[in-house]
Image 1 (cartoon, rainbow over the protein chains, first blue to last red):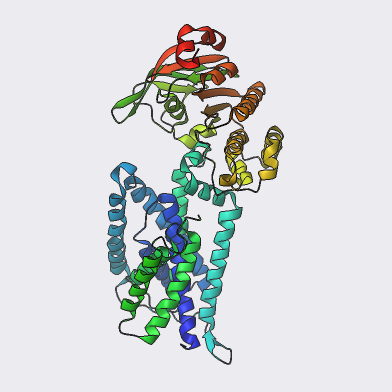
Image 2 (cartoon, each protein chain N blue to C red):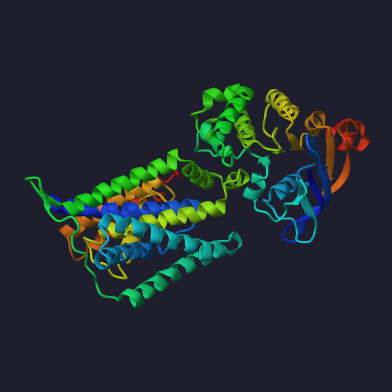
Length: 287
Length: 236
């Protein structure tokens, strides 16, 4: 049995992957595309928070909000200026895929030029440790978990109880009818891309005081949340959450048991899960 | 109020609607008849902006304003609402949510509530189903919910695309009564039907389309007596 700290670390990773995967699935269910540059929005989230806190001295919670809004707006611009123009049925899915893959390198290059390639570390925002006797947890990590729960509950409320949330679900279920009743699919696409990227940014921001910030920090979380989506069943929001949870713990526990080949083992496990359930755990779309 | 002037609609290079002109006045009940693939649904979708009228080949006016080229949500906002073929309810939303979203463009909450009451008196069966998901309803209930959703939008013109498709004769009768009642309340209606008899019995004016072209038009009472219509569409 791995020590509690390993499970805690797994939970922290779960939180990132869940939030990332949720945003990706949301975008997928409306735009019908995988945003390959999702990890770079995560990276921008970390960088914005770093500069807001370290350079501008803005309190961390407000910096987090600023980062979510700024990166959300960037996501909306990307949708409006790039994705909307190439995400046309007659082109097929290849063009928009190539466009978002290109964005990975564009954003990483731009971030390297603007902010430098070296690691930046944000000091702990909430120092101190909660001692539970059997094990102890830093307040920073507790903050990550609480924040993730708040984000998920907020998303649940937005998607189920607000007019815009219902409109988003309507577009994902029957876009033609949505358009006929005045719900602009184009507008909803922009909004959802904004929400999805803001969620990635929040994940990146909340991690900034724990992990180093650099232009390439988005790659691993992106691959992991992609795996989470596939395990959970693509298109399912519940699947994204459960897949994220599973993957975070798996990753942390495997790395503890076998440090050298942890990724090999992880991916073998993922392949095994998919061999048993190719459609993922929540294969039928729940939306 | 609604005027189509010599419109052409193409799918790739094939014209689905050719040189079609059609007029609907306020309060009218108009039906468009024709066989499968004659271009009836395409005509409705051209009005709603779902398919595009070929550039430079025809225009559509609503209350004097040109609407072809506008996107569907804009056209819906002007008061042209379609009850689409195959119902197209949002399957994972409840009936209540479906109805609420029908009134997506209605900013006035009070008005929305009034409309909801009105709609539920017209469709009392839906009252028990408000919290059921759209996909759990039977075909007949789905059609009623789809019409109710259309009414929630408070339309000036209501377009029906094959509402009787897949309904039993009894339900079809019920549907006819409902549509008649909506028309009597003053809503302008355009009804597309394969079931020519139903369309002609309900509407006051009819257009017959063949191969995307207008073949015949006139008062429905005259069309019912027309030999060609009888032979081709009524099976007499």
